[in-house]
Image (cartoon, rainbow, N blue to C red):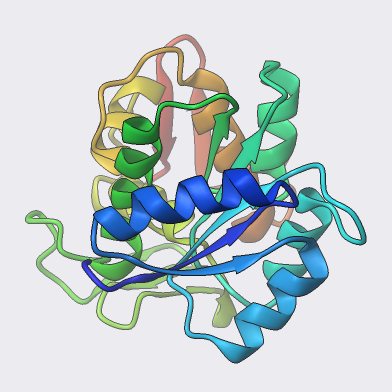
Length: 232
């Protein structure tokens, strides 16, 4: 993961420089942008493995930038925002972000979240319990070598986080996983108050794999316990 190239997007140049300094100390390359339009240009001109993205920016804000990026790319996006309400976090995750950290942040925590996201993005599919390159559940087919999902024969784009959640649940079809267990297995971090975070990712996966997300055929909630992929 050393030498991974990270795009830092923040209109506050001092914050951008401070983040750049911390990331370079960890061996990462850094590209900086100061608004959403510059961020989109940087993605065209540089090979980026992760994006740290401020929300409140001129020309194109962070949430709009996230939605635009998600039209074609699944690289990890960590939203950085001064807003700490759960509703703001849920909105950011709903737009396609993989993680959310609030200002002011501990530099060590930021670096830890970056490393966690890069592990999932750059080393997808290395779970010990995945022995077959394809996992089939009904019309869902997850190719763990190609890191691709097909739903009824049609390719569906997943973010790195969505992929890992679906891989976990499909590999263990029929088993119920609590939000805390999903978080620990996918994020590789202790789980504290993670229900909303996991719920948003579950909702996004449903929108991609279900004909009617409100009446899911595959990804079911077991009320008061957790989530599972229904066996077919």
